[in-house]
Length: 451
Image (spheres, rainbow, N blue to C red):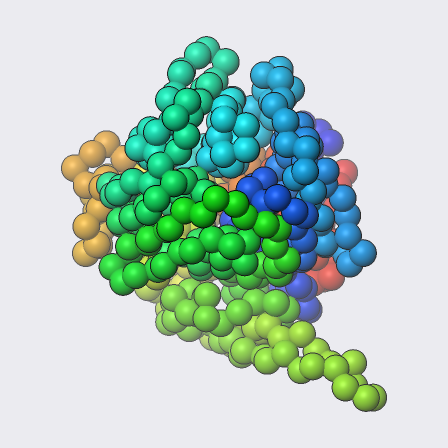
């Protein structure tokens, strides 16, 4: 672990400009969608993160030729020779990502069968795949559970179905979309997730020739088509990374401009950011013209001075406050005067990271009760999913071990905001979702280095 540590000298405000690329939660799914086409696809603004490497490897194992395009961040996918991959080869990737489950529908369409290894991902709750498997069975797939993983087949092909999710799961919605687009007949999905990344995936599938209608009240209707072609697409920017840098600016009393960040997808976050006392300014893209190179738009975030305000917030599915936003923001809330309340309603085990913040001087209590008005699946169950943050607290340096991706970035923010020198272990996990974060820290004037 000694080579997977970052030494952070805290107490310096982050100042400067960084850029976010395509959303982690969209790019990997767009890569899987390329399996469905009968011609090459091109995806731009792809971040260099671990999840992209994993999916690229899985596509290669299944015969998809993946090459770098002419533009930095461009990938080209040629699915002309899709083939089966050996169980042993696929298992090399087991535990490194939860993306393999989304290969099911495309592989069933292309090959008639699929193998999915044991699934990994961040340890923030079990995130069961029951929704996925039930949906695939509804389409006509058979699922054979074996010790090494899941073997799926579709002896009679896949057919459209009516399906209602018990919870608007993003992953299960993606599963249904990637399966329904080439299933015979019409599929109606109720209680679907409608996150911006879902809508962008729908845009990609529509470019490929799919017929998808997004109705009101979380209803998506998909009319199956016999074949799809490749796509050319530039994904929406990563709203999670943008909000993470915004929270870092607030916690360190700094000023960070995030190029590429888009207001429309971050409206809920921006409202809370302003309520806490942070300031932001949306800058529009200025196209290049003679004598002017132009400027990419984004959002500038800064701490205006004075005290921050305590707030009460609840995480929820879109358009609510995103669960991936709460961990970085909680670090800033340790510096707000009064009692802030966070009610986590999406993942039942997402507040464990607060123990590390308390070891740095924060005052955070977690509770099993639902401290909010949103109906919650975890009420009256044995999950500590609400937090009360008392502030302001003076943070001091500590040795920290990163438990998962988003908590890891919150630990990094805390180390940047604290007085003294912290050692943050397991930082390579942050590379799963934050491209070149160490270079971005340097660009913002942070004092951090590998030992």
